[in-house]
Length: 75
Image 1 (cartoon, one colour):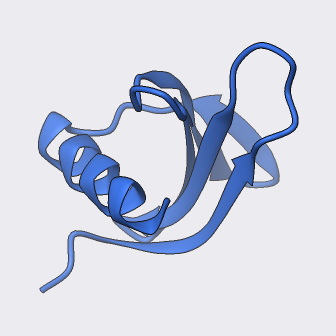
Image 2 (image 1 turned 180 degrees about the horizontal axis):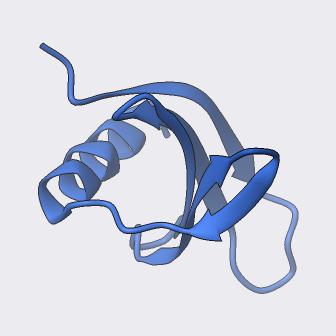
């Protein structure tokens, strides 16, 4: 059974200073977005989307680590 499913990933390579990777995923029947620094995959922010609004999201560390590993494989 999957904990989450990544539905989209955006790699921003054109920034002058830092590059970022944003992963959109479904977790617990909700849509989330998590942005990492591309260099070390440090989390910059995470959001959950509900009722056409975004809120800062709490994502359990086990899920964050799993997403981080999957993003690392994809980039």
